[in-house]
Length: 559
Ligand code: SF4
Image: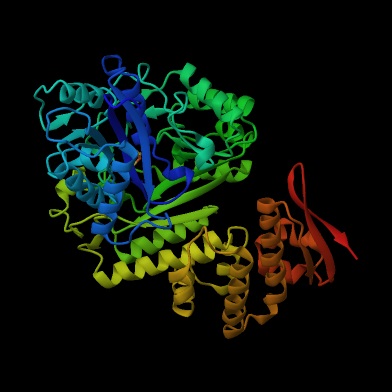
């Protein structure tokens, strides 16, 4: 590093260490700055990401800000402005700000500015309200690939610039890929976030896109192919596709799925999809690669969805989900509580409807009223009370009291533990039918009896064998309480069998099980109706071992 070059450090604070939290925004800006011809030979760019989960990352905001500022100074290898007017001590920091990190980022920026450094901020939180954050020298709203490099050029040439800059959207065929550019190595993150398009044709009121351009811009196919080849070379294990409208253009979606199957057949892909646009041909293409779809339902009440500009065609939705289930495509659903017009009753109906669709996982989030979104503008008219600081969670609505919001949160925690982490999709609806209770009621009862476990649990950290023990213990108590003890032997077999199969799928490790019933019946469709199973299948003890074969996890009888 030459002493006369100016260091430009693109930085962000990640919420967790996972490929989903990879610092893509900061990496895109690094790439754009690095490749901007007028700055060649004048600057050196690097990317420095922090993570809330880092062992030594401080817990309180002020110490965290000091920590970030100090580390950035060390990375820059500069001491700040030496007061001589020269730029030997000079560096520029570009902060990528999200709702969860903006307070710390702004505090770090203030420390750096006091030492004579220049701080630029961008990212979704700044895009939403660029004039609000005064702790940076410059704020850039929108995509920064054109604006930030030219702003840096102006700063270096001591030219005047607006403090708040609204970016123009770049032509996606002209911007550089941070993966192909070597700015970010997906192997380090054990996965990649993969941008296929920018923009969204929909206008959900709670989303930053609600005020964005309605046009969708696509990344060119040559870049997509080159990135896929890089993922193949690096043996990237998983890729999260960033395209909220992936399957709206079916022709392109099919073309890309075929390309993925050809180039990275062993990589696991996560897509966001719209159920209404799924047909059999597309569903079959999804089955040709290892993948899972996440589908935003948000509410199952049409009036509620209309209030947030998310018109919903229930029939088409059910048809699309039906095709996914018939073709064996793994998918999850999302719901939101705290939406305007949603009562606790309609929220529960949404949970019951969602579970009836047999999602592999059901993610239930609290609504965030993000400043700068259409919902942010309409919040008071709609009677939404929400936190004044990030993450701007709804506190209460006209229809949901604070107590209702707390009930919804607890229900979400129970669903996350029992259904998602407990991998209960195969047998959960059948259990509810035997108990004659709705899924939402089941989750509430589970929370009442296991509140500590639900509060402490996190999907990714729980050991499934331990969860299974909690599930069986709870089910045993509930079935006995309700005089349904005669179903327990079959239920125990079904829970244990599908649990072991899912763990073998995950780890490749065999497990041995003693069952009360013949395993062929436990593995059959009979198991989806516990009452019918018990009435028609005779107990027959057996011992089995699970194992992995080419088609996935299977089992064999052993002595
Ligand atoms: S929530 Fe998704 S579908 Fe709705 S506007 Fe935002 S990006 Fe588009």
